[in-house]
Amino acid sequence: MTGLLFLPSTAAARNFPQDAQWTPLTQMGVAVTDPDNDAQIEANVVGYVEKIDTYAAAYVHSDDAFLYFRLRVDETVMHLGSYKATSWVCLIDTDASLNSYEFAAGVHGNILASDVVELRQNTMPTVNGNPKDKAETVVATYPVSTHAREAPATSMANMNPDFFIDWAVAKVDLAAAGVTDQTPLRIICGTSNDASSLAGDLISDIGDTTLDKLGTDPVLCGPTGCFVPCAGFGEACTVGQGVCQVASTNICDANGNAMCDALPGEPMEETCNGIDDNCDGMVDEPCMDKDGDGLSDAQETMYGSHPEDSDSDDDGVSDPEEIDPGGDADKDGKPNIADEDSDNDGLFDGTELGKDCSAEGTDPAADKCIPDADPTTTTEPLNPDTDGGGEADGNEDGNHDGALNAGERDPNFATDDILPPEPPADRDNDGIEDEADPCPDVPDPDLTPADTDHDALGDACDGDIDGDGLENFADPCPLDPRLSCPNPEIDVTGCACHAAGHADARGFGALLMATLLLAVRRRRGRSPRSATRQGSDLETP
Image (cartoon, rainbow, N blue to C red):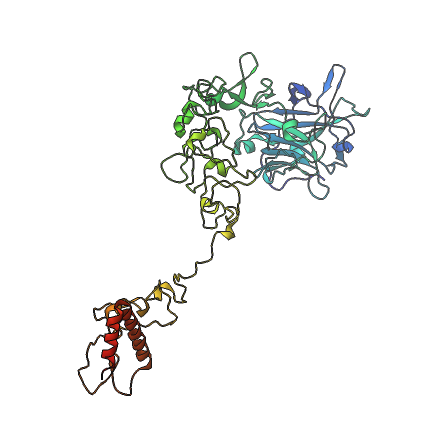
């Protein structure tokens, strides 16, 4: 259905160009073509080469006000004065990157509403090179009565006359979106179900389906028409190498050849940093590696290792294998590459990494490497507690050989890090903890030991139980500091003074025991004669 658009963007298009004014779109300098019968006939874009004649599938043209598009189709696009229910669309790339496109321009044949020419912008591209990605923002719309037409073609792709469908969009609308006569345009055309993308017959003679394969040679479209300045014009390019490399796009030189519109950067002195500083295509070529370990002398100097020793710390890990070589995991002032125990957990780095101490450059006499007895298990050389259980790896692997032996804990198993608490100390095994035992080295069957003189030393280990200054063995009354009874009314039994009839059984028993011990000692220390005399004295009332 035809009809005027509600808000036309610009005035009516000028006269469409003559056939000779159109510029065929090309790929690598060859006009784009498309096979016959690969789509519904009015949606079947065609283009072919016949002997010396080339019938391009798509064309462009421009003047000072409009940008024009033309597609060759297999059958008329009109039906009863309206466009058939198809959309004929060209996607426009303006940034030299075919990961996405920036604009879509096309004729939308709509049987339910007015046919329309649309200019859309792809403001949220998917950047995956898919031509089905929709240009969601409408920049301008135009009536088909003034901005679109059907024209006869001289070709006959399927032995029946072909047709052209032409349409135009206003340059002022493109300029408002940043597209000028100096902007290289790469154009991808075909058919679709609406004018916001390409989802139908894509112009390709080999069935390509991605923007990078469908994109044409760039064209410049100025006030007198469109032209391909040279093959490769507008394509992304780089000049220089290494740090001198600069990215740009191709322009055409005076001879019509593409050249990158950029100059390479300035080279610098080559240093040992893994970069081509002098821009000669080689990296770090002058850098020496005296020990042949793969690290240049300058790198080893930077890290703090020895340029002439491939295992600077003799831990069984060659210098280039060291983890974070310039770091200092245990903050001891030595870089990891020169620290045999980088995390200070008691295990050498080589043992933690499963090494056997046979690496070139490892000196066994340095005693900084223990061969791993179980290289199938390793720990982290920069983490003092590999399993995170709270115990250092070297404390769990008691003999530091890398294997889990009897009586050891597993440094890769966190739950065995915490040991059960030690029972309270009781050196004399009398059931009283040392901290509460007044005689920790002398057993006392009494769980509340006696301390007669209250000197914090239990009677069982007190050399002067009554605290009278006389050692027990020399004290006739070791349990009573009083040596005489001031009151003759007191009943003197043995040596201690007690109120008659109120003797403390426990005290009396202890007193009796001490008296007997004292008597035995005295008897053993005297001659038989003295003992007899003493005995006679004891018998005298």
